[in-house]
Length: 91
Image (cartoon, rainbow, N blue to C red; front, top):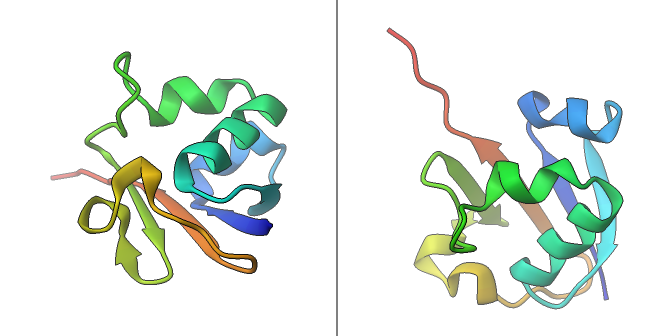
């Protein structure tokens, strides 16, 4: 099934400026793997050495944070959007 990964502006430099990328995946983990196959720098930017989502990265399916769903195993349906937003800090 095809899902759309929507990227915050801060991540678009790794996709040549594309704000969204369609991938074939049935869960969040597979969507990230497919994204990394096309854009290799993504995996290290989004996941830590243990394969967990980095603390400063937020991912949403629809309006729901994957941390409150099934984490990386959150199921995706055809047509879903996975939104990836790095946290912003400032002072």
